[in-house]
Image (cartoon, rainbow, N blue to C red; front, side, top):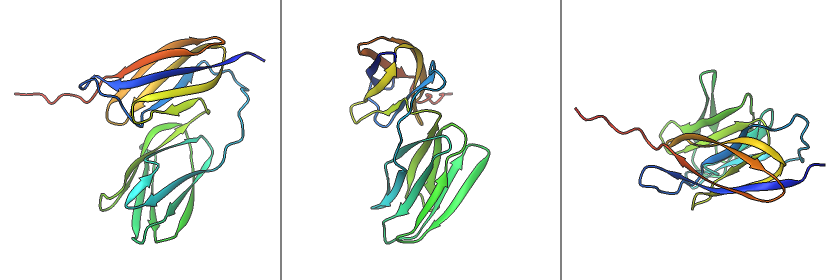
Length: 186
């Protein structure tokens, strides 16, 4: 078995150089077919206090996740999976529903008629991903030795890719996303 290591780093935006929380960092190429993947618990998306918890949910292709309304309000939740489909789910208090993740897609939008809920579901092909914390830091763990292309992405700050070679020790990367497009002035 090849030695495993980790990639640690930080994601920020060129917009004032600020750290980005809830950015997805994932391997987009270099994962060998048949890589051993541990069993995962079913992912959960909870409506609580008028917000989604977590605000960004990552699931793997073909997995299901449970959406639960823990509030006393009724919500009409919309999940917009790209151009191919939209789910409208009436969520009464205490209701649970199961949703199956289809093809890989970053940032399928989760919203609600009245604009109370804002969040995303990211559907990835494998478990080599991380979400950044409040300070923009992340850790990709258990990567077999090899060369990978990783991508950092944020729904409002863009995407950037970086190639990294992992051996038996940790590798460190700093990733800067392009930021929001600037408004053109006449």
